[in-house]
Length: 321
Image (cartoon, rainbow, N blue to C red):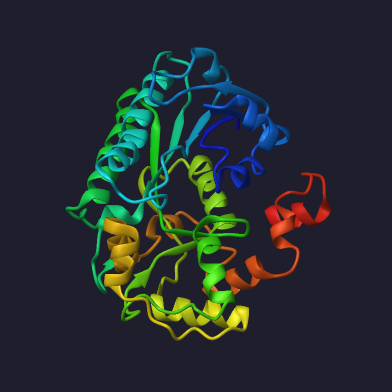
């Protein structure tokens, strides 16, 4: 399987690259990519998603495209300008990518495109599988338009999977990286009542889910990229605090987080009981189906350093396989 990857320098990208054989990487900054992930890539090709399709030669010999690129939703306040960046980086970027993929008849046969559980919005205790309807808010609108652009590739016979991803947990950054400092200081706690459901996934399982989607021809359309056991925020708080051996009893009120984060605070308090029906029914087996197991692996000594070890290092291979 010859693969092409966008968003390869992000939090998930390098983990995915380790599971692929000399993939082609599309990036806005080839020099930075060469420094950080060059040893994991076969080719590094310049591409600005906002300026047009990738160069045709990027798709030569490519079987599958993994599309992970997009502006972070958790960086900075959601000003009108930032919301436009979040939307356009996904919608316009995906439109240009698909245009490049479909220029030739001998192009890629599959597109595995990231999406997000933001598609579902705040849904209380409702169990959400891939057939659940979307919400009517900013993130849901972004996800709908994002997935529509990816689905356009299906009109040219390309199998498309949109991976609706939850909270990604892993060493060295991501959502967990933002949580660790207050928890280690004993200042962690539930968000509000703590009753809201949190759809999470270990970064290693997420990378494997992408590959599973690429290799499983029966998977098409939306696929919830989350662990099979979502937890309430209160349970997440207790489990993380237990792993860190720290107290966690200071609830964070919505009003305070709204002042700190603006509109993004709505995402923190949304309840999404998302289940990976498509992944499970297509035979995917999670390495980390339970939160305690996932956090124990991520927070165990040496794991954060593992990511930066050479690919040939036995400890790194054990973690990444």
